Length: 419
Image (cartoon, rainbow, N blue to C red):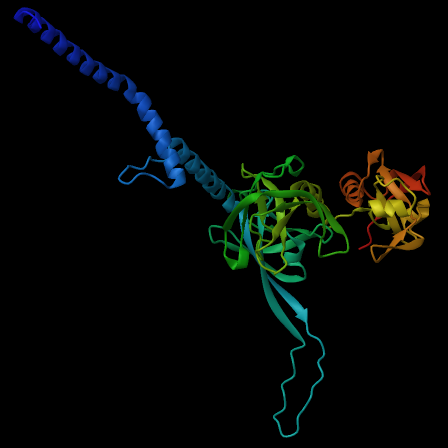
């Protein structure tokens, strides 16, 4: 083979070296240009690895993004700010109640020392929560907190303890108003919200004195709305109660339930628990009921409700079928009317027949109220809510009822709830 001249071989060697250098530089340039993109991909991969807890040995954990930390800090600061602003409005209530003792039979065993006679009267102490309603010294709490109280003391966040006077009570809504003698500059009234504007999932904050642990804060959400439950202090029910998973325990009664802006949306009243513990759901009286009742308690000492004078229940599918009505028909079935009450005077008819449904005796045959003043009535709760919020004693309402399948109008002049 003919050998190439030395000069040509030298030129080829130089070209080869240049090509190698170009390729090396190209890879360096490519590495620099790709580094940001590879860096972003590595962060995603690391984040996914952290989620799967399969991060490679020796790798550095990716820090929590500042935005996440800021959101958590903002949440904490929000709750802390609400507590700082509202806690001075919340009070601890201590009551002393006189309880009359009962006569007990004395059994004397021969030869034994004579037993001391049991006390005929004794006193017991109780406690609860409340909040400053206005700058005139009015305090809102639950009626059951101060029921039969002979002495009431109010303690404020700054430690000041003063006597209080009960100026008004309403067992039907389980509300009471107290008054303390303090100057306006010592009082921090709450800001009221709107319980009609609440929604399920909305933030809730409770401040009170559970188990005597003063000014305790708990948080949660509105877990349900529109509950109608017995007041516990009368035979009537409280409509539109707020259900919350914020811890409501003994001693929280009378304290405020707040929204995410620190406005009062309800008065904490009870916990429903199968085991009589905090493993349950809490309930609060809606603030719009408080708006309605508290000013009247301050002015008159008591609140009067319109009274229809009937006992009823929801008309369900099985009952509707038993009454030869459409299975989709809904309303408030009249079970019984009070003798001499407004419903009886207006001609409303209660149930007159008993049938067995699913093994239980059920009363049927009464009027079915399907509207009041042209407002639809689908359940008994609808009727209760309308009467409580929209009517007063002496007012006339128009009931639309179904009687034997026929629709008719009945005018009723409402009375006053019996005490």
